[in-house]
Length: 428
Image 1 (cartoon, one colour):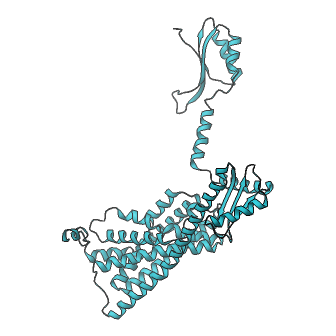
Image 2 (cartoon, rainbow, N blue to C red; image 1 turned 45 degrees about the horizontal axis):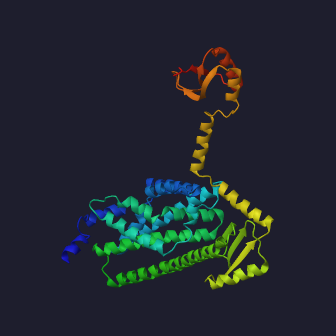
Image 3 (cartoon, one colour; image 1 turned 90 degrees about the vertical axis):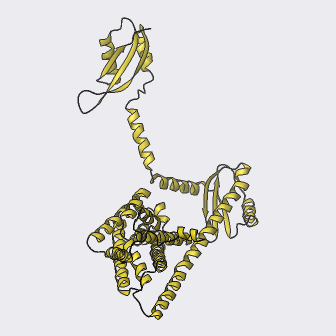
């Protein structure tokens, strides 16, 4: 048993407590360079959320100095250092205000205000976000207290994700969407709070010296922390429960559609499942099948039998309304052209430069020059002794008594090509 405890021992490789506290204090302040770095990181994260780029968001999280005052607050609570606590909270409030200001200004001025998936995922925190923040905070503070810091710190910055939610809160303010603002700011608060609590537990476990003598204050702080933990966790449990019910409803609705319609050969061309309406809704449209009111009523009764309660099935059979819905969805998709689509378009454009699309060219050559044999032609790049390449038309042929000057002149006029090269291939 003692051998196992040695493996779990946190005191091995621990940095001296005075050095750790000095390092923590030095990273709390948000003045000068730290404030500029934060503002730039917020701007980068906002751009990443705006264009739905995960890589850009990760980059912003890596350069963000937001962890400093949060960890400082955890150390201050763990050592009951109220001077350090006041300084940490003040700097965290400054950092939060600057972050909200920069992100709100960016999204207010940005012409693109569509809600991307990266933005949307930061508006409904759940208990899983609490767990990520807590265990991410544990890893971060354990790394801070080591002599060899190792590489967990960048991972903690990414996992705990402080930047995206505060930027999403700025988006909510800029667009006047208070539900987005409140959801994202709650997620940001969860991350800050549970990183701080994780730091508090590690500091207590490693027995950092207390700056407080009176045990009454110590008990009050512990009670206060316990109450705050409950206050922060309870809404996230509710949101997690709501998310579970939403996924369960969506899965049940999909299974119902599969069983009652797809398996009977009815082609579904439009499907929209909405959990957040009252009542919950399932909207469908079909390629050719038309349903009577009695059949639709019968399917609605089947929903409850399949465990889908409080939901209404609507089958769209009005072509005008249906067309407008489908066109709306297509337009939404068109606004989100991926990098892959852009790259494919560029490749197609480059390939078009080399293609000879005229299908009658070969027939005309055989008619005008009956003595010509096998013919191959295409465009290739010529590299003269300059910095640029030129495209030229090349025709490879076999045959006898071919007037090359004449065929060159004809090809220049026929194809509107200045550079035409003829190559006679030796017959085998």
